Amino acid sequence: MRPRVLPVMLIADEYVVKTTAFRKPVYVGDPINTVKLYNEKRADEIIVLDINASLNGRGVDFAFVETVVSEAFMPVAYGGGVESLQDVLRLVSLGVEKVVLNRALFTKPHLLSEAADHLGVQAMIANMDVRTWRRKKCRVVSPTQRSVTRDPAVWASELERAGAGEVLVTSVDREGSREGYDLDLIKHVSAAVRIPLVANGGAGELAHFPLSISAGASAVAAGTMFTFREPRKAVLITYPNDEDLTALFTSAEGRQ
Amino acid sequence: MGGRDELLSTAQVSIIDFGVGNLGSVRNMLKRIDVETRMVSSADEVLTAERLLLPGVGAFDRGMGVLNESGLADAVRVAARSGIPILGVCLGMQLLGNGSEEGTSTGLALLDTHCTRLRPSNSALRVPHMGWAWLRIRKAHPLTENLPHPAKFYFAHSYHVNADETTDILAESTYGGVFTSMVVRDNVAGAQFHPEKSHFHGMSLLSSFAKWHP
Image 1: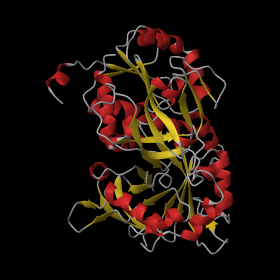
Image 2: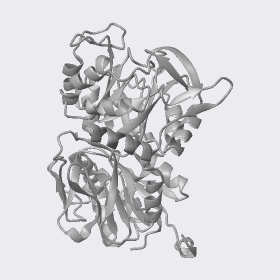
Image 3: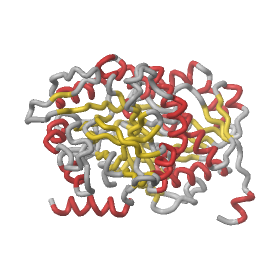
């Protein structure tokens, strides 16, 4: 079976948006329509991240998550504003397959283990936002906006021990750039853990996917690449079909 | 699909709510395919069910602990003996068996299975197994006869079921080695994957379960 390709849906105030290096959110479209389009395209699974939930202090918008998840025919990973075990359990009971923790990894360090004890590691994704990767001197960005100088590989290993079933590695610098994934970062982090690594940030074309897998990722995520909106038109989704994806990864293997 | 399928009645599916489940997705998908559902959380409700679906995520011992403490474990065993169709999904499939390497509890013992950790022979394949995999159907059965071939489903697990009786194996899948992905004996069946998150194949399987008369 070929590696998974995961569309990322960034949500701000119940709209789908896209950002560039985490800034300048641009309206993309309606989340329900977007999910329906991903259903039609048979997307492997989707990652929904509410980028305002922590900032606005309201936490998880459960009613909204429920409407989005009920539409999806494939697994949904949700992150944004998750602060407590109660949040995690409630999300799973609504149909969320996996919960993404980001800010809580710093503010509530026991939450990941607690949640993994209850649900199993396969329900927990630990996200790390990585900035300014220079050889080994990269910084994992703390959501409290004080960047923490931490080696992403060491951090990933700690997260694995704490109960993460997958680690989502997001290159903030590359996000929205379409230049390709940060392959050095992926190599560095994937070598430090045994759980699957999902690469995120930088995908611009299909050819970037097999490169990321060869660097050690088990799955690839992309936001900007799959969604775009022309002025005065509805959101367009360009998720490739299964045959094309299978051929993409197979031919890449053949070339190695 | 012919006239006969329409004549086979679709019974109500009772989904066991024992606090460790992903009930939302299961209920949503069954609703989507027009299958009547109800959530059950007591032994009495289990005993009046027409057919049972046992979902579940998480650790084996925790799941069995809740089932035992609530009296649901014994109720499910009685229900199974009475012949009503039962489908265990994900952890639910694992709990139908005798036990798991993951813990020390005894399972429901409705099937001769025990769970061991996934140990893919290919080191590039990581655990937990997260993602889609094909099903290789091993025998003809009403639960799988309407599936397109090949069919793929979404898996999210670190442990897998081993069947002591090979005749109980309904389907197998591959992840660095072959593992059993579906089991069935008489009226008790199990699926390791998430049918409720597996697009149209999942719908087809759940629909077959709703119409299954073992």
